Length: 133
Image (cartoon, rainbow, N blue to C red; front, side, top):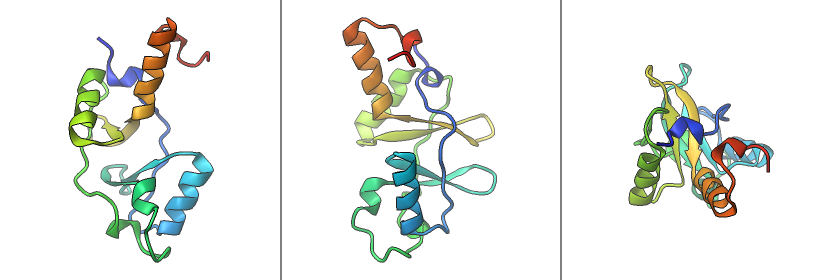
């Protein structure tokens, strides 16, 4: 069984709910990402914002807290990766924050993570070869 922690990205870039649309867009552009978990001071996930949410957001000084999705589905690192894939397909989400036992953010699993697994499987590479492309 492949678990979420074998696929997730760690060192996740986050933002606070008082940041602006312009701040979020800049952060995503610089980091080359499409999803930003919104965390409080204790790194608890309080929302999530995506490039799709920001696409038509006006004005650019609007706060992220007004746009973010507040009911965030999270997963645990020890859960089967298939569970994350199932949740993403059922809810049409492109990412899920991964939280530890204290509910703090420890990673993010995205549709890209699953596409990388599919690419490796189709090319005959193992999961251990993850960073060797």
